[in-house]
Length: 142
Image 1: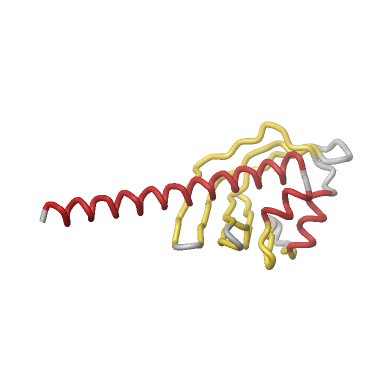
Image 2 (image 1 turned 135 degrees about the vertical axis):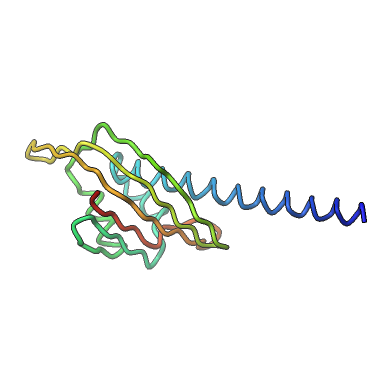
């Protein structure tokens, strides 16, 4: 009985550690995505982050394909300052993860006009060839 208990505890510890590792990877990829979209706009990083059949939803209702989103992000002339991410949560289910958070920033467009962003974000991540890839992103106004 003692051996069975030890084996069960070891199994649970390994499962929790594996779950923790997956969740950590998803969180890191989520922060990298946000940093890239609202900061560096590096198309090579976006290519690595996006799943082959990704969809990218904006707070105004526009929905883009993977290719459209990467091109539009890379060519976006807006600058984002005072960025913050709050109320971050993850839901893990096998090789699918859902991440929710609130994103706030000040956007300065190419013409110099500024506006405050206060957005909710939902990201759906899937495992693709051993890496977490963004399958869907939806932003919504708060």
